[in-house]
Image (cartoon, rainbow, N blue to C red; front, side):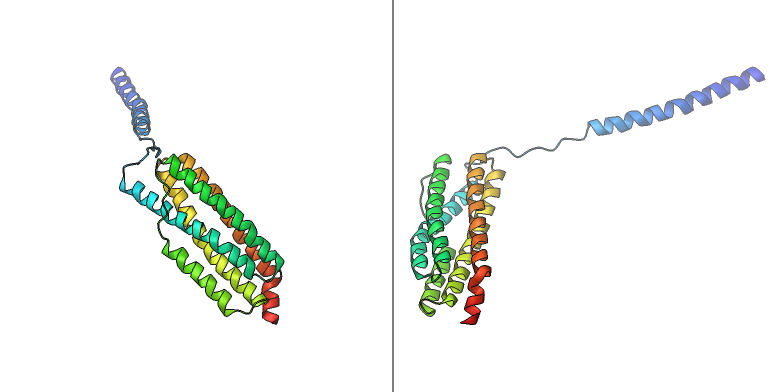
Length: 208
């Protein structure tokens, strides 16, 4: 009787010892079978998304070319030397943005063609309206010009930010880098305009 009891105890002990080992094996197998996330690296030159991307590049290309013509007029209309200098600086930068877009078209093996940007056309028309409706030599005009210019900058920031993400998702790394550079420049211009407005223009305009 004592011998039989020992055999039963041995079997029970073996069963208890092997169960955790099986559970551990199942857990490890489960971890190994989990697929790793895939990175998006493929280019999509022939996709509808790529065509849409290029179409939007043509849109902002038109916008930059027409802004480059409008900025000298905005500089001439400005009252304060600080605002005139800011417009002059951004006119030079805008020419650089045009060159960058032409480089992007070349990288994509696309012809640099401008497609009318209705948004920019409307924003520049508004800027002209502000010049016509405000008195020359006043800070009210400067406040209005800053308003118009920042609307332009915010539009460009939204556009370049989105196009940068589009380029990244299609694997156009070089293009995304170029768009990122222009994006940062547009943000810096917006900040500079805010500093001029908050520095003295708004306060002086309110006192007129």
